[in-house]
Length: 96
Image 1 (cartoon, rainbow, N blue to C red):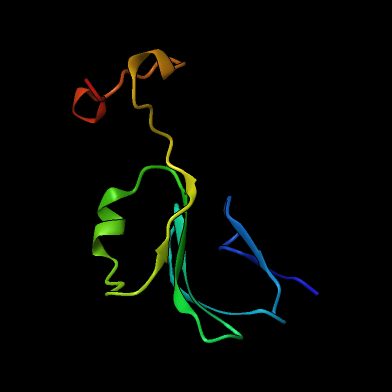
Image 2: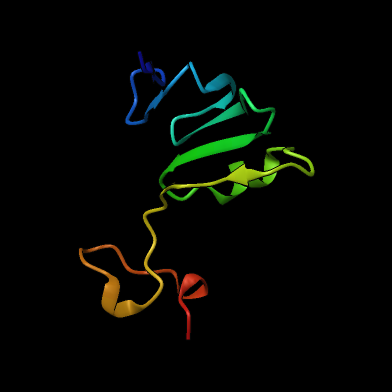
């Protein structure tokens, strides 16, 4: 049976198979959740699921020298032609 974890009733939900993974919440915020994970084979690491651009929060996580998976929706465009909507792109974040 998969485990489901809503994060403070926000936009991030996480599901895992407890027969394979042991997951413990490490850090939670409005835009990310970080889990400390371990599989039944002994592989250990962290998974941070991101919803929005939160570089400062990610820099403050002290993960250490272990595997770290960082999937998510970072809400950022790399090139100006990828941008849709009213808000202007920050020129420091665009590849030239």
